[in-house]
Image 1 (cartoon, rainbow, N blue to C red):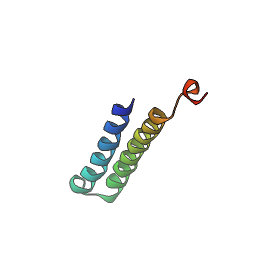
Image 2: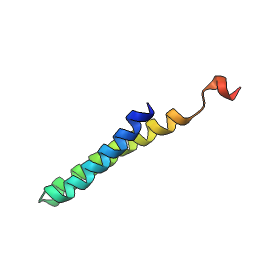
Image 3: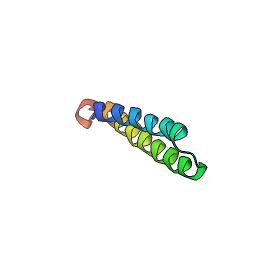
Image 4: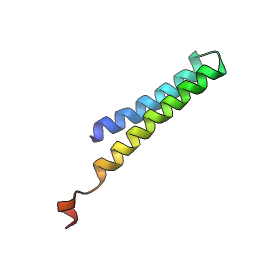
Length: 59
């Protein structure tokens, strides 16, 4: 889970940065920026969930 979360964070950033460079129109750029940020958000949620202690560890 941790690895998948970190990979999604990197992939989302790559999508967002690539959209700025590659896409000419601002509407297409905006759509890809939102998609990249959504992928980053999913990755961030996975990383946080992977680092949370389980119920057995909490006591």
